[in-house]
Image 1 (tube, rainbow, N blue to C red):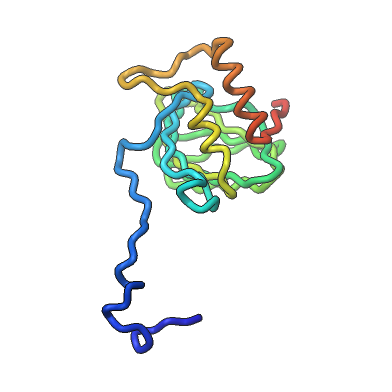
Image 2: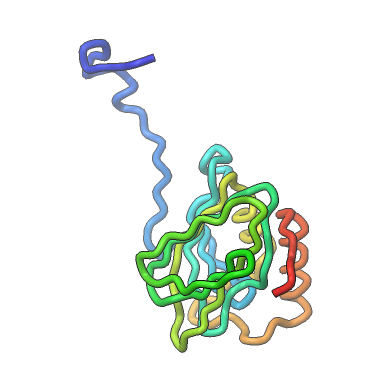
Length: 172
């Protein structure tokens, strides 16, 4: 069905319908996962299952281990800093402004090899892991950095997240 100004009067309710998801800067559930800081900006429940959207701050040395998602894709956009990405068997360095799309089933990871934090946004399509991260990662404490050493509690949370999300951990 196609609409045009000729077929819909200016007072039609369609023109007045609202429903945008608005998450102000600095808002959204913020957690510590694998030493990184993730703020969940949109979940599948908020996007009709279409995608999950996360803002990440990855400290020096941060980033997850190599893994693959057999049933979803992951897309990244680097906002600040640089991250080394593993793509199958090769690596490359992504910098601010770079876009990375990882298809289903591709082994990948990102690591901050620099001395300062990197920032990025990333999304899962379809949605799912972002809600698991929100539910199982350790809630961030304002004004504190994530723990530098992964303890048993964090490791258990990470393993639970991977199992629930169907993430396959792979060797480096």
